[in-house]
Length: 471
Image (cartoon, rainbow, N blue to C red):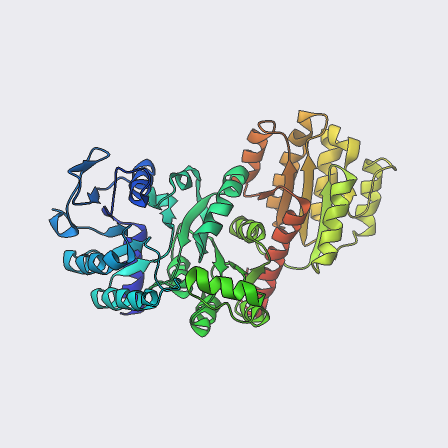
């Protein structure tokens, strides 16, 4: 199969005109019930065909005994059947002309049973023969928010707002772990994919596809093991020139490596070697799950930084000191302002505040003119490449109203990247938070995550400079 043919067939997976759910059920204890429910509640607009010989209808939709009985074309089949039955179903997919499949079925290569790997290899042979691209097996499924397609077993993924970050994970559990954080922070997602055992769609295939996906600006990868590392690194090197990639790789210890093998049938390999290869290929490395999605969020919305010199602005000193500590610990330079900038800031801020870097706004946050001017001075300083802003709710709801305009306008006028830590009681600053997001300023719950996200912008800028890619 050619590269272009492969990408075209992946398009049928993510933008199908019709979907069949094989193993659909009315039984709430069956995965087929939740798969069909997710698809319907996700708002998919095309024809939906439940496949189960035991029903005449499910959820008010006509049910069919097999894929061959469906009167129309089927672009995508969501398969929720036992492992042994999956072989027969995939063969039916070939006969019915199905173009892509999400194989939720588990109990294959990751299983300790001797027949598991053999069954998976047989599934691969059928898929390759029929040119059917398969997400899975051993997956929660996948979601394309821009197509209202929830091809998994968790309806709540459809609550996530449409956006431009795509997450490709070897573990469906990690996708579920990140979902509440994504919802809380208001991160807009494009695609969420659980690769599982990677029958014939791997990380490299997804990178190649997402590089050309207009709905994706940044790509987050959760990786346990890699079957073809050279292929992945070569693909990443091409893709990173046009779209940022972040990866969180597990399997640092021998026990984690063994757990990875029992989870998705993959050996994790030497962590430090992978980390070095990722960086060489232009992949930004994350050291945790929240860090992974936070870095991808920042890279999707902010420009790469042109240097490591960072300025920190805070409403209160404590957050600024935490951010400053984190900057130095992560290899970023806490910059020194020019004498002119320091002189002007000292005239604006009272002597009991920190008036160098980090800048502690303190009570000046009550004064729209002084607050705005201090923020603009920091952004305008020639020794500043990037800015971290820290704001928390204190004794006034108005505190955030004053700096928002200055933060947004200073970012736009200077083109310097900015990340923001913003914490407040539920419902207090929701409108203000949304206005910052609309201005493409990413929001994080801690100063540490805001700095980590900024570091991703610095590292991606350094990669583009090494690769002679203008930005």
